[in-house]
Image (cartoon, rainbow, N blue to C red; front, side):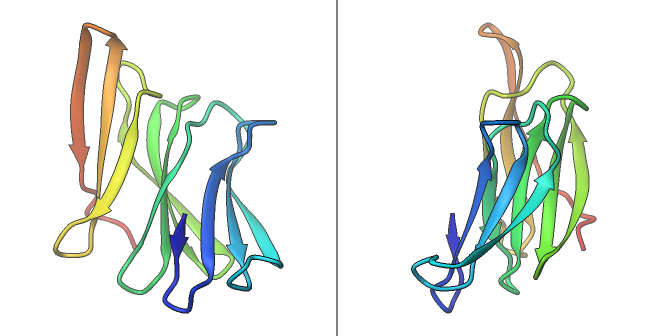
Length: 130
């Protein structure tokens, strides 16, 4: 969840019924009315992480395990662009976090793991987001 400057929340979540990644865009501070945007179609996706960029746009990262990649969805109003940013080589689903660096770029930390004794901590900073 992230809260915009005007107090309206945005909530990114994994729909447990089908594996889709969705963004709940609250129209009021108490979220009594909201719109839902599907960021990733149903499949084997992991729970998402979200930050707001310097312009207040949500950046939502998730692991698309069906395609073995990490994706960032960047949204402006109800229009979202999905950008694959890196490949998961050994196995995903073991953690994901995101923050902005001092230049306002997202930095994603995640584990690329084949098992409990065979894993790497990876930090990815995409340079090509719009």
